[in-house]
Picture 1 (cartoon, one colour):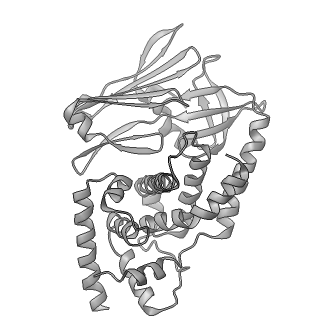
Picture 2 (tube, each protein chain N blue to C red):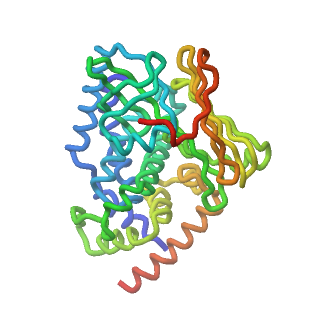
Length: 194
Length: 156
């Protein structure tokens, strides 16, 4: 039987450093200062870009509505949200909408926006799960069953809609970017440069 | 959220989030990174919490997810040596040292379940929610962890 008092006494001696706590406070201050001079827009960033971003780690070309490619530097990131700045000092926010569905120990898990959601029950009963994130305008829909599924991500930003479709290995589909002007332009995920 | 409110949250939850992350990652530097990322997410969270307990459970769930994400990352798998645990943790007694070492020798999911159950006084259902597992699975993890600890602490 576990000696609970000993357990508590032991683990109460684990502390984060004061420096780490001060750092996180200063991150907020820096962030607030940045927000006062921000003029940027919110840009949706495709899941397909994520892998390439990890490689370039510093400068990234984003697919934007104004021009085909635009170069930004990553000045802050928390893993799925990034603060970006271009050469002129214009700042903007990008979200990594990297929704992914995995099968872990027989459970179907949706990984999205820093969360892991067990959707097994919904897939068994309904064959469908819908995730919505209002701030990002992100909608993720999973259709299929617990072994085969299709994931569709939609990101609304102004009059632009980005939509990506993928799935389990057996039902993997292509990625798709839709804009009102250009219509639908099908691309394989690997074709999108960053 | 005001800066003052955030500073209070850092003070109130910083160590808890660090312990959760350390229980998963066994590395001080990574655990502090997870603590910071979790607190930044808390700062940016727009939805109100129903109660302080709800707030704490949300924070712990995010810390668990961030830790698991880090544990899975290819970069960490390549860069962290087999002996992850740093030497910075010291204890008042040998019994504490032995218990800590044996808990840290358990698989990550057992360590987290044991920590949440015995330190944070989470119920099995709350642990299941935090770890994204079935309550019956958590019950099994706890039972196996107790068995492993009983054996190893008797040998020590």
